[in-house]
Image 1 (cartoon, rainbow, N blue to C red):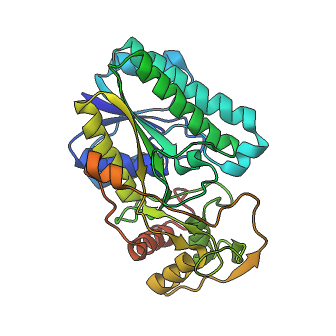
Image 2: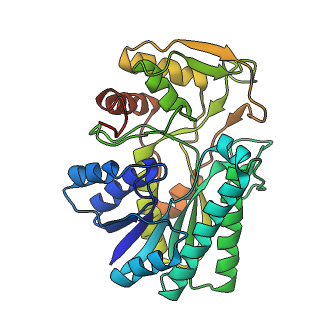
Length: 337
């Protein structure tokens, strides 16, 4: 029996494949490589010493997904596949709704056909919208504020409705906070296409000389140093969270949401300074105007994940910075040679 990982060649997907294999699971990956590289899966095989069967397919292609289920004994699914850039989603909302919603519905239809009713869904803290209190807890009201976040919110609703209709399902909705870092080997890490949307790869690309300086959006927030505060979580901790969620799903039925974060907030400048301290590499920066809609601070209450899944984040910001730099320094152009 195997675990199907959709979008398994991506940043979080590839790290999750490593941790799933380390935990004794067999994994099968389906990915259309729109925003990932098959090289990451070769690196996963190098790290683990295990072959990773790979299908280059779009999850919206129902016949292709049926073929995967027909050819393999699949026990559960981890669903990462989807478009993920907030800014792009604002510019191209129909593309995001078509891709993210349709691929999930297609996947669920095929899973149902084959009697596979265990799924771990890659959701996001964006489903909380602009929250009025911190830390964020799973029972708080939901309401995303951009098309990307709304696709995550809508998919959560679809999955909740599915469980109401058929209580034989077990569904884990994993709400990520801000994944950063890389595998200790330096072989896999975050490889954004073009200018990075996220803070840590931007910092590391400035450090390696690909970008001139870090742009810090706003220094007048009500925070420790005026810059925005977020809950940064090591990608390996996040990957282990998926292992724990699969363990749980295989033993239960239900539909539950879990925050995956550290519970600690780190400001933009604190993260930049921690990177400089951990690596000894200077990262020049400039203060730009705030971006509309950015909240002062966002961080998790991850108590439920600890109590139900037995998961807590282990790595601190120093290790996140060191591991990011090991990856970036060894792979200045990402997975491209």
